[in-house]
Length: 393
Image (cartoon, one colour):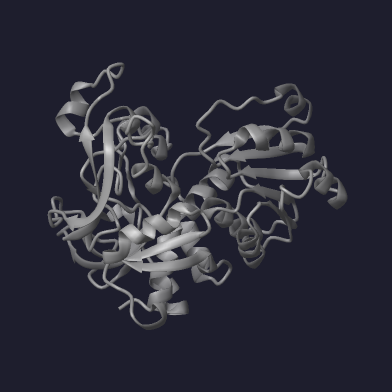
């Protein structure tokens, strides 16, 4: 098969002690400590095969580019991959994707050949403490399509049936091509869903929700908050194009933080002390959390979706006196896929306006270069090509 493939040199830093499992499997726990001089190219990878009676072979049709994909092909000053996460090279990237089932194992009951599916990228072990407590996204032995297993930016993939979620109802309502687009957005939307619902317990209908950052995860949070009945969805984002997308997805008011003080804006809206849920999707928590704390409502919730690479200082006493809480999430496993698919199938949610550009697999390197510019909300790669006016061929 062909795929958009990351390669790198295996060169552990002197201070990093490789484990026997890392050396044997080639799956390193911290790519930024082992893998040097990453490169990206469209290349051949071994064809996937059904290795279990529960496996599903998929013809990949749409795969989104995520910010973490950019870290895979970006180096620090010493040439090491910037991604501080498990990785194995070479690998076809793509952990946000959809496709069509073309073959199933003998014991598969959830899907059949011809079905359209969204594919969960994370592969949990099922036996570690985190998995046994239902926190599968925090699995201690997690493998990941697009990170340590070949993913969706390739012509084919294989997945266990438990990771394949039918898009049949979406296709029946909106058509096949739209369903593939939706399927490629389910993973980032499920990250937001898990943070908002599974970790933080959601909010009351009519509550005020603020989202900091209108990148891909932030925009899915905006769409979900609106669809789930928030009375006001406030968005703080410096890029005008992303503020416009946020409004399309349900934001009631937006603000450019480069033009004034966020606290003053909250005051003007009567939101200070009345924000029931604040969602940080920026990865810049050091700047955002101090803006959230004074505005949080009694009993309010802070949901951290952005990956902060540096420690964040929090004035906990203020949160204590507001009886507020802080919640973290990692990844999409935990129930987001079926819920987000159902909301699209019911016509309650449509995240596809987030898609701002499309590329064929052959032009995948150019797609990543465009993503680096940071202007696009979601760029989609179509492994089997794009036809007239962006329709999947």
